[in-house]
Amino acid sequence: MTLSVAPAWAHATLVASTPTQGAVLQALPEQVEFEFSQDISSPAYVIVTAPDGSSVTSGTPRVDGAFVRQGITDGPGGTYTMAYRAVSEDGHPVTGEITFTVGEGTTAATTEADAGPDAAPAQGADSAGRGSPPGASWWSRHGMQAGVGAGLFLIAALLLVLSRRPVAAQGRADSRHGSESEPAPPP
Image 1 (tube, one colour):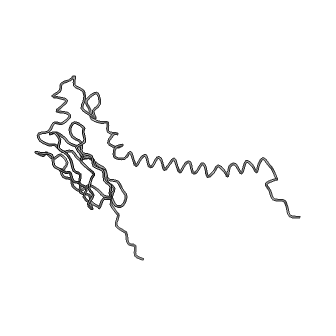
Image 2: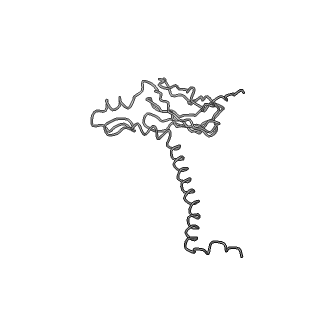
Image 3: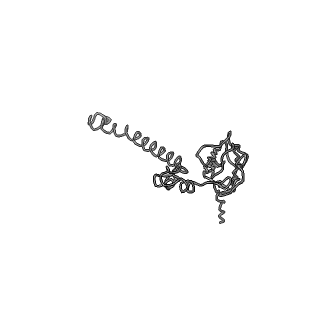
């Protein structure tokens, strides 16, 4: 007897990006690009955020096999964030963020230090100047999946309750009427 094991199908992952994580560029490129380990289904979503929090995304992302490309408009120097959400052809979502800097760049920490102690915290920072709480990144990546799972659980629980309700009501009706629900004995 021979057993063969089928290969495990891995989900799509990000293989490369242009610009790469942590890259320092002299000028903002005209587009950003993501390369995945598998073909990606349309639509894909990309948002490129400038240092001031505004979007520099232009148009809609173009999906070409395992590549997703997004045009961007001109923006100031500083640190940019490219957030992406794509779905591989096997139906699994792939999300993430890549940051890069244009010019010498100004990070939020540098801006706060230069602004002095009375300045407001940077966008996404709390009153102590810290970044977003750790749970925020988990929810941004998995919030939709958790919501869908919770919704499916509630639907299943509701269907279970509703499917048992008529059986319970019938049982109570039989006990109230005594032998009326029992068939008559044969003559």
